[in-house]
Length: 372
Image (cartoon, rainbow, N blue to C red; front, side, top):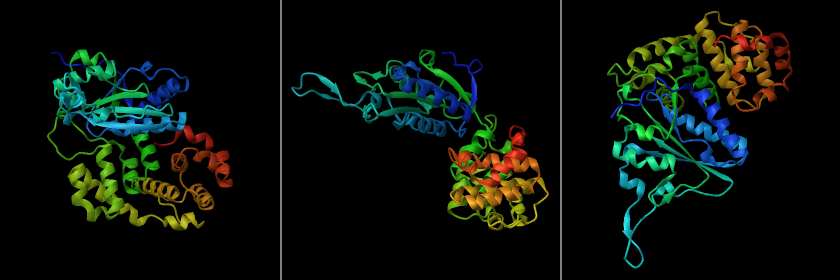
């Protein structure tokens, strides 16, 4: 059986994927078209690139745009066998025929104010017998006598055979039932997500300075620990939840992203010792601006995280915008652009801040040419 090639399918960053699929599903829903108007989607990409996270963000886009509640059913097909998808056979009431108990994944809310997303994750890691059982789900939206509700979207995801993960070649009969998209890592899209979701400021600052370390997966190596958006989120959880010292947490961090990147991350932490007080900046004081580029990246990420944590204190945020006027213009623009990612509609809130209005008048034209 020949392998499904990815050379002839489109590649998208996580951010672009969310934008394109999110808007497409919203158009279908808002125009009251059948959800099967959109074919089932297959997301390909290396481990940790953000496929699962993208599906959840697509769900949020649909909720925000349509006002409907979105339920995501996450099914890891690697853990299934064909009988799990069809259900357990049993006898009917008069014991004359065999019937199949409905699997839990088909227990979905079919209300008109609800949208269901059936996410078939790790489909390429499932044996071909399980992939074959997914034929009907992806095209006919059925397995045996069980049918998905009309308000259900089907999205599948998996790693490529070339990623050296557990992956079986996808039968072409199944492949032809899916719309294929290859997911690429994108720092800009990841940073926007990271700011909204409370990723540790040291992680954001380091990757702003060394964005090539966001995705360090190489299928040609046998490394067990390597940098991906998923492993950086785990690093952030350790720093946010256990101890914010990279030095103290170094052994755990190295176990997630590999010792090479972890050493550079630990070395880079030293720039934080020379940063001006973030509290002083938001209190309206004007401490000296650091000169080195790595310190400026650290400063902007720290200010952004502080602003997100104090997003309702517009006086403090106004003070920080006034301070940004003393920073190099490119970094001032990076900072204000990051502020706009804090939450949906935050730019409109900033427009009520006199310091932001003044900043827009003097530097707003630079927004499209910032260093990112």
